[in-house]
View 1 (cartoon, rainbow, N blue to C red):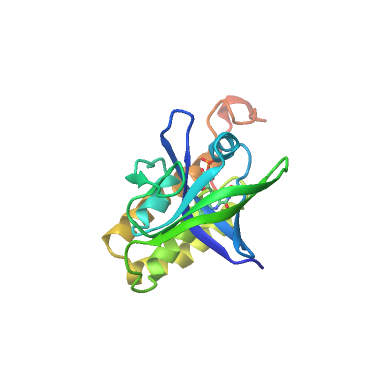
View 2: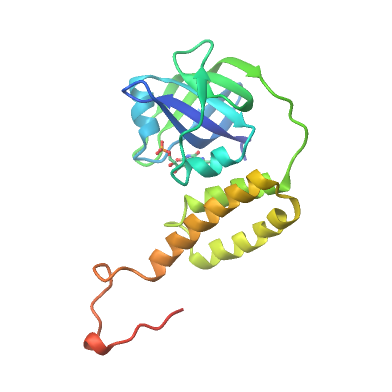
Length: 209
Ligand SMILES: Cc1cc2nc3c(=O)[nH]c(=O)nc-3n(C[C@H](O)[C@H](O)[C@H](O)COP(=O)(O)O)c2cc1C
């Protein structure tokens, strides 16, 4: 089992703007591997400009926000690569792609650390932040996991939220909860166009689960 650091990865879009996304960096000797599933703007960006920054956010809302359509977080220029990194971070690394392992589903980009710096002290683990990270990952796998598993895991993670969340963690949790509720609702109640034809004609009533 490799060590994986959960970070906010920043790559540059073609127009020079930043693409922020949570990614796990897989530790491999003294390098890190980024493995985005296709299709992915991160892949497009790395193919054009093979540099990225990876930051540990001060605010867990950045992670929850990036997977719920809230990607507008402040960035600052990197020091050794042409790129930007998340501004509010405990620390960040600047990385250069040194090898690409092509794959139809999930290519792997092995990256060399060009530079790293600390910006704010890390004072302690917070269970609610970990819970938000777990829930954020679940929210990106709604199409892969059974609804019952997602609901059971959310119920367990909610305990840490209830016991240890501050206002930021509570807000991040609400964003993820809403995404999951909407996603699971859509899967269970497909719209009229997606619904298979009713066997008993227009009078047929759907039973709820
Ligand atoms: C903590 C965390 C770690 C993640 N790690 C990965 C990863 O390693 N690879 C991946 O494809 N998606 C990962 N995801 C999901 C992506 O963040 C999400 O699918 C994103 O929209 C894909 O990025 P893209 O916009 O470059 O396609 C992770 C999500 C979270 C919350």
